[in-house]
Length: 159
Image (cartoon, rainbow, N blue to C red):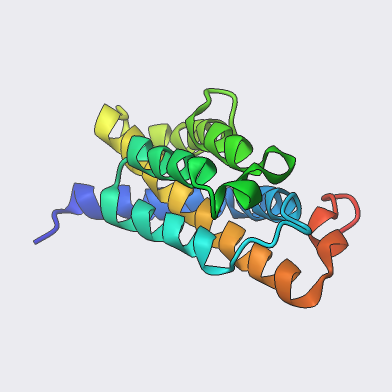
């Protein structure tokens, strides 16, 4: 059973994450556009998302991407335009999308929940990675099916 503090935290977390969605979606769209002409199969990004949903570990997710980069069958698509390495940087790097957006989420959480514990920060990163990979999958599917890659490259100003 959830106590009042847990419910407040969960609601505050959902609101703070929701406020980052536009940035996450735009980044996922632009990143998916790197795959134009790659021949990547549509399920490959979904497989990474599945790993993220099952593992709750950023290291496990990036290890799986490195595995894809190294495979003879899937590697060329993942290496196209530096895509795989870029996705790893988005997830792992302190300058990457996930770290930047997690910081924004945690800043929004602090006034509502007080002290942000390390496990809270980890939960935020896991949540954002799952969203990012989900939107990346959707964007790639769109680009691969429609060949409208430029739709994915649009900037915020053009949207």
